Image (tube, rainbow, N blue to C red):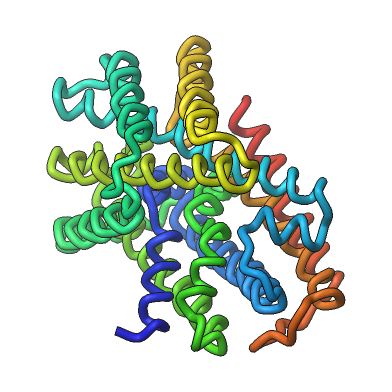
Length: 372
């Protein structure tokens, strides 16, 4: 198996995660045509930013994580801001998965989500225990998650393909134009995997550009087909977690997907605290596990616990801030990079500013819509 193929699979597996479960719901609020616009626009925008990130990696002699790149090109303050951005995104995802897992398990066992609070607490204790033990088998949680995600997608497409009502795709609500923004942005995020892609392509770095474009094109096709199938089958009556509306076999797949994604993200954050900020393994574990449950309980107390809203806010804020930092770093790396890269993407300050403004406006509207 070539390194190029492995790199595509690794990047694609990072892009496509449990966030896909929320896409049909938010797209159903705006209408498929508007949702498709977001899928296309954000795929192009994030692909461009990932290409800049790939160029940054290729211009940097030392292998670094995103926080390391930020420190090199933006200083220590840049490193801190980058870590805060990435941590915010991961914590948001973990909170969303606590909500999603608890509601899915409650529905699976009791045909109702009314027991989700106690299930969430039990699930959190269980996951915290597993993460504390640090079983090596769970180091490959991301790979396992990808397997469940693709199995779920294939089965859903097969299940719904002959039950699609095309008229369900005609619905349009321009008043909810920005409804899909945060969730779809979250679903495309894969910035943190770039150092790993560079390592995989160690002897084929000239294929970095092609790897990024290919992976994001495939991700777009999967998201679009999945959304067509679910909306075409269910219309606008789609729950926040798409699998809950498709039957219990799909609920199980959704549970497994979020389970492995929770492990993968938690492990990544523990490693970041441990290696990037030199905290002990135990402190890193404590910092990782307690923040999500505290936020979750606060949201439950104020009756604001929503899988989609948490992903929307997390994706919009983390994705926008990280993207802007990468755009700034790309400009710096072109002037202060260590080596000549295998490819170079033309840099336009006006385009970078326009992209940043679009992301910022989309994030502000997302926050306003979510909180009102």
